[in-house]
Length: 393
Ligand SMILES: Cc1cc2nc3c(=O)[nH]c(=O)nc-3n(C[C@H](O)[C@H](O)[C@H](O)COP(=O)(O)OP(=O)(O)OC[C@H]3O[C@@H](n4cnc5c(N)ncnc54)[C@H](O)[C@@H]3O)c2cc1C
Image (cartoon, rainbow, N blue to C red; front, side, top):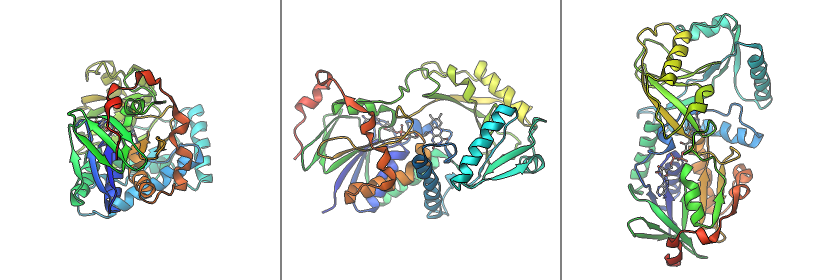
């Protein structure tokens, strides 16, 4: 009989693992307290890369994940493309940043990560509206990297779930979890109970809440606080006459196409102002500064406006690395929490589905067990719901 598996969380991670589980024949139900893609997956720069990611095991996981995305897109070539195989251009203006970039490129070359170095003229040929700082003489092209339109990826994953008859329960908050030696169960806020073989927690930045319920403190960056490690501004422009068809990482502004001539902007050095409790106004300091930088970078920006500024809230385990593995004694509840989830989702989904179905740990995930981030949570504080949750059969 096929395994009954619940996936809690319908972001890119939860939907990807649900898809892979369903393809392998599991009977899958997805629960989300809100709508699919309404968490971190909705507000993301969504750059698919393994650039500057260490240690080497994390780099390799991300590098393979790029290929997994490309393969997935090839399988549905006639549908709206959610993966833009654009590559990334990067350069530096001042000597110190240039040294850092050269050092990173050297490391990436040793890892056989694909890129080429080009001169100023080649860069300008590829980005014709660029107003390039005169100090820039060379640039790096990481041509295997991609960008994602998250909503279209989510649509693709949801379509696959429908095709495999996966039940997706929206507006269904999971408030309690339990396991026995041979089963797992969960309870929804409306009192409904689900019972099956195992549960995957793909609850992103909310993971510590359910982990407390299991008696664990999970070390994650608190994304509800103003903190540049946890939060980042993403600004969206109006449609502009700029032929940008790639991702660009520049000294003062990261820019990517955002559909229909719109651009998405990110300036990491401004993120110490990012506070999820205080939305940034498009005409405020952040909007004005992003616009100034965009106008310095490109011509054809006379009519540029910022239409919206989001504060993205990262799903980030405290050490920045993925947390993927079982978190309970009977190995029936599995956690998948990661930053770089846009890059990792299809590959991590497949590797975790393999592990759940076969019981064999993937070598690629071996270094990312959540144990390193867990400490016992004071049992007196564990939700009282757990106390009356019937033991799973
Ligand atoms: C500003 C920013 C830039 C980023 N840039 C990149 C990038 O360039 N490249 C990259 O690879 N990654 C990037 N990321 C990271 C990436 O977007 C995330 O890692 C990824 O979206 C996480 O997906 P997820 O499915 O784990 O989480 P989410 O999308 O947050 O999904 C979790 C889901 O769980 C649901 N949920 C939570 N608790 C419960 C509950 N109790 N019951 C039921 N449902 C529940 C939520 O409603 C939510 O839908 C960026 C993130 C940010 C914020």
